[in-house]
Length: 249
Ligand SMILES: CC(=O)[C@@H](O)[C@H](O)COP(=O)(O)O
Ligand SMILES: NCC(=O)COP(=O)(O)O
Image 1 (cartoon, rainbow, N blue to C red):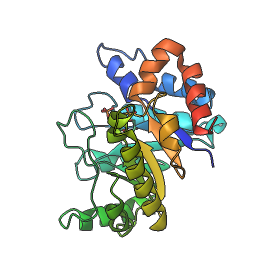
Image 2: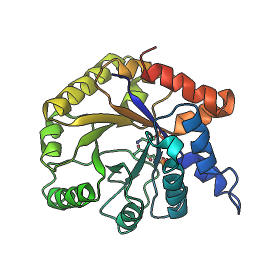
Image 3: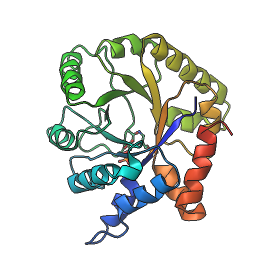
């Protein structure tokens, strides 16, 4: 089963926000990624709109509503416990919502939700039900902890997204094999719990192929490294290189 590639356009929006206007257009970047074969686009609207703005989410949804992209998906990531997020999701009803526990001032994502958290679990369960009623697939951003997968499933989510920051840190070091083993066990535990398995954060052309050797990854969402690599190889060639890795070539 090939892994789907969802291109995260946050960093194009970050560059766009450095000046008034809409150059470079993050949605235009997304279109180039789709034309090169990406199976979806990911956006992560944060409360401070440091990169993705609500209007970018709406324009990305409009792009993916075009007949040419009927098979492609919109993945909207964010913290459903913060007030800015649900109104955006209710407005666009994306194919997938990925629940990420980032605080308002967090520099970037660095951990996942834990379904064993007695305080958050009831609220996450209710939010998951609401989002599924909107027609969205719900994915929970989690650490690669095999013991956390059954609790995640009990929230009613459809998938988990494995936080792959630790994999990127371990790649190419003496702890690479141990890290890969942790992700393999976590992915297997998620599948045993009836969950689909996505993955994301700090994945790159260098580290993705080895990571996907664990098998069973339905979707990877990649942005930071992909945008940097596109500066060197161009958008289309970079996406094609990721697609080859996602198809096991
Ligand atoms: C959830 C995750 O790991 C990333 O999708 C996140 O969107 C990165 O956010 P920044 O692009 O703001 O670093
Ligand atoms: N969910 C991960 C994502 O969308 C992009 O993360 P990154 O590649 O920008 O680190």
